Length: 426
Figure (cartoon, helix red, strand yellow):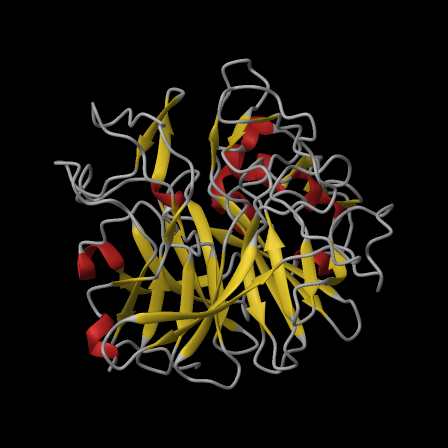
């Protein structure tokens, strides 16, 4: 049946009840907000082979930086990030079975609004008319991006604000979280990310999340280079991977070298305790650039350097808030000045990576984003795009998100199942 999904099948969606927003890309038309939005990540159902979970982000939003305050327009400020359960149908369609709304520990539905304290991005939230929202923050708000569905029915979700990694029960109620903020009392079990992860770049936090097959170690990958120590380094190709042992709270940390400057790593999924698939992409559409970059790599950490185990000496220092320093510089700074060869000279090696599939070459992949990976079996891989609720923004003007130059095909969450791949763990 997987062949029926080889060229892409859309997930079901509703049309959000927001009207009369002119389409800046097509004169005389109005934007259709598709909801949907289940494009942030997918995770296999632990027992049902034809079912998968998919995750939304913080809801329909777009950049509104006309006041120079990192503004974001939230078309539906009350929007609740959610997990959807879907099933592949024999006729080649996808059925949505249910939705799980994400909630704080009291059972209140959270929103996608920015955090006020721990994980605050300092983004200012506006409504669709350009007015600052009176209640424009949410301490439990998530810009959810990574998803793991566990065998016990619970979920781990990573986000771009904190970054936070939040544990939800089967009903979507928060039961614990992991982040890089020592004073955050919501961390019930005491898990703590390395503190340098608080230097995440805005809107490029922890995009990918997975767990080892034994369900003992969480693995998260940042979307892009962190602002470590500041934004001067964000055009680097260095990305951090973190591993969190859920039994003993031990932390490991590795480096990933992107193929282009400031590309995005948007998904990670475990093949074994040491090997993972990772999605890497640029921001281009195929209609605009037939050489757009959308690839899936297999990575192996066994010969990579665990940054947490590098001992201090005259050149190395483990700084509490910046991580491993070389000659007083963060790794992000060091790679920009010395390149990766500079790290190798200090016996610091990134993960090894090999190409699994080039989605543009294989599919003429039309979307700008690939954000979900689902290993169905050793030959079949499913990939899912983020459609941004089918709209975007250019220079402050809202536009429908089209996949073709004639502006007739509107983007939507679309699942592709690829066959004849080697997805075995070595």
